[in-house]
Length: 280
Image 1 (cartoon, helix red, strand yellow):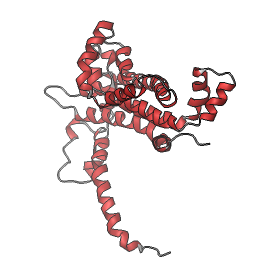
Image 2: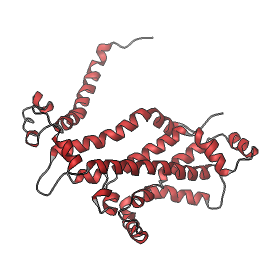
Image 3: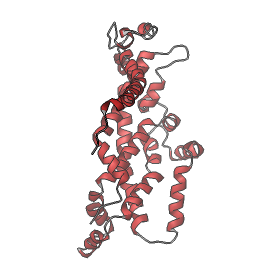
Image 4: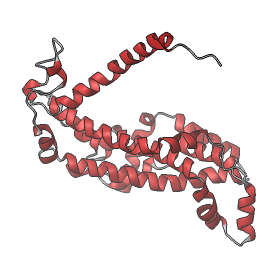
């Protein structure tokens, strides 16, 4: 087998390095700028030098300010709570819906599944006003229920579970029925434990959707105690000033949390998206 001369790959490696620099230099600048005083943020931008990416005066003032004065810690906890509850309940209900579409036969199944797919294609902005009116009628404004419940059903997640369960071995389900298990016990004892990869994939999608959500939380929240991370970040800017060091600090934390969750589960996420179900 002929080996490719490494020197021939040098231009490709060089191109990759240049592209990586273009991607990571802004992130490095944002990271280091979160540790600068406000007056030093853009002082060393031009011309580029080591001071552009390494703070000359290191300070934690931005982090202290966002947590003490802006309540960023509470917003961080709110987003984590909302996202984790949505993931847990979303996997449960979307998984049961996907299982029903995959393994059961009932009148109107195809039409109902088509509606599920269409629901994911409808822009959220189109239904947000009706949802908001519903939250008012239910008296859920400025509550966790308003932030969580409308985000649990997800057409794409139902589709993902349905595709996975289409190839789930029927003999396992039949064996459970012979042993006297009911529908729910079969799902929770046999089907769900053997579907970890797709559950992780669905959970990550639900988590990221909730973590990055801005329009819906800003519609249904009133008090600062209910703010999420994205709303808190928007409050670091005022009409007359841009607190860039605080924006960089808050954005860095908001960026690192989902990355810290996604990276260890990356292989499961890929497996859940590519797998067609358990094999015999």
